[in-house]
Amino acid sequence: MTRALAMISGGLDSILAAKLIKEQGIEVIGICFKSHFFNEENAVKMTEQIGIPLKVVDFSKEHFSMVKHPKHGYGKNMNPCIDCHSLMLNYTGKLLQDMDADFIITGEVLNQRPMSQTKHSLDLVKKESGFSDKILRPLCAKNLTPTEMELSGLVDREKLMDISGRGRKVQMELAKSWGIKDYPSPAGGCKLTEPNYSKRLRELLNHKDNPSVKDLELLKYGRHFRILPDAKIISTRTQIEGDEVKQYLDKEDFIFFAEEFNGSMIIIVGEPTEEDIEFAAKITARYSKGKDEELVKVKYGKFMCPLDEHIEVKPATEDEVNKYIL
Ligand code: SF4
Image (cartoon, rainbow, N blue to C red; front, side, top):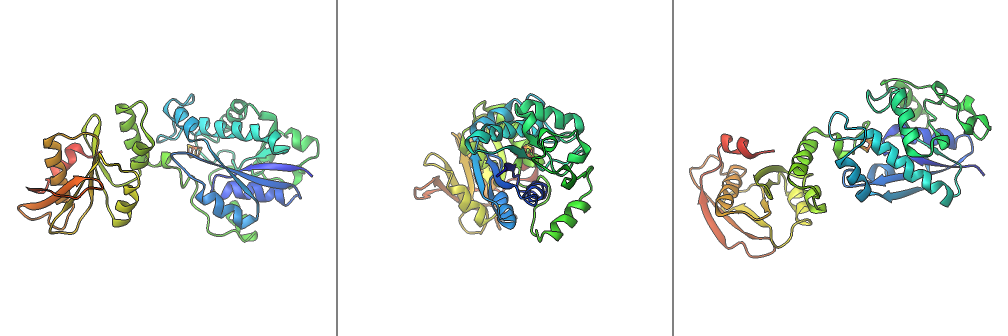
């Protein structure tokens, strides 16, 4: 039986591409990738809707090396989509033999994205992946030169599509006809496409060539203030955020809470000076219900230890916040 590996991003297009090929009686196995910047959550939900198995590939290390120095540069934010797609295709190509599969499917649509899905970019990605003869793009195949899979009759070209451009109407109708609901927005789920996250990542890379997993994970939470080249204050915004952040902290990190008011948990990662501790306390006061008070009492200490240090401070002013916030 013919078998295809479908690259599943977690968005609608890749799942439609997989379903289109499955409808031809071809066995389809989903492949999705996880890294520091995206995970398999949406891909799992989407593949369940069309009933195909999913293999998750963790390529965090290699992906991050590429994100730091992408050969073809970045998109609007820190998203190096051309290099990222090529890398994913290369990994998937290498799985073809192991998984006894015949070709690869992607959900790319010609001209859907201004930089990464032009004809030139699609050709480039194909070439750079090292598996150009094995890549089929079912949603826009009829706009492209027929592939080996179509010419040999492995795939019926007549049943492929000719979608082009940024409109979503055809995809939404197709999803409706197949009962696919609940799909995320295009490119949803990749932190590298988010302006704020990208700004913080760029700033982090300016300070550290090799950030740790902790550094990268913490970028996803709260407000960040750079106080020293190797130290930062992070203010969590909700209780849930505070609880999630704790999994990345270690006993060298400081945490702060306002003593008499509800508010954010404030963290210092890195080695602070006494001045930094005072500033973190001021931030704690600022992001508490006591922000309009003259003075606010703050308790602090090392993570996982009793918070038995106390300091009374004026809440940080807007100017102070703006000076350090990233
Ligand atoms: S949006 Fe993110 S995951 Fe998708 S290709 Fe671009 S960088 Fe990679």
